[in-house]
Image (cartoon, rainbow, N blue to C red; front, side, top):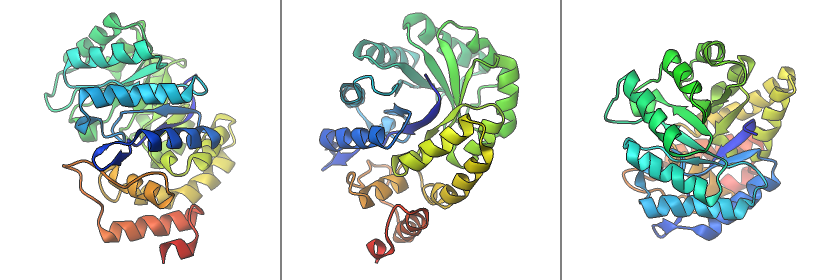
Length: 296
């Protein structure tokens, strides 16, 4: 179920509020473009600046719109274990297929603390759990040994690995077993990650290039790495441009160029600089998402 191109969905805003109409339109377009699954309210979905009520509403709209056509991995992470349990319970109740549990940020738990955090969620809510290891944002890194402990818990089925360390994929596969789902959390290295045993990517770029990202993952899953490399070469300028500034500012601007939503982000994120806009437009033209005249 959890294989291929999963889009880490942006949360569109209009005049500061969650734009449900735009979100529904984005989800329908994603499914029509061949996206394999959706991930609401993660990092790209600006979960840190959503109220708890907004967070839950975003998940509800996603589930209601998808209607079981593709799997949904709902963001449910928090640096408070009790909050993470509440989000996970809500995700299960409304019909999400799994939850994404980020490593607790800011409070810097030990490896034992990371394990106990995951175990508490596992024990409280009967829903598949995808761990989310992103040390660049959380300042904690779940070790391979701790991940292997977590993999023995009933509900822990996989990891979104955003370490960009390709050796981790092989080490985690050896420690957690070949059935442990490994999804890249880093678009630029997803090709190598899949070659090391990964089964897909939770992608930022797929917000604006869902068909290409799905085609890329289909090639990888079929073992056609020659085709995948060609698609990687085509997508790489876009992968780079979307991370010139902090995600999701750039990808929201890119989405606005496609008419999907407003480029609005919530403070403390700021609108992207003019130089970044130009780089994004150039990358989208090179990939074939925009015509040159659209950037003039």
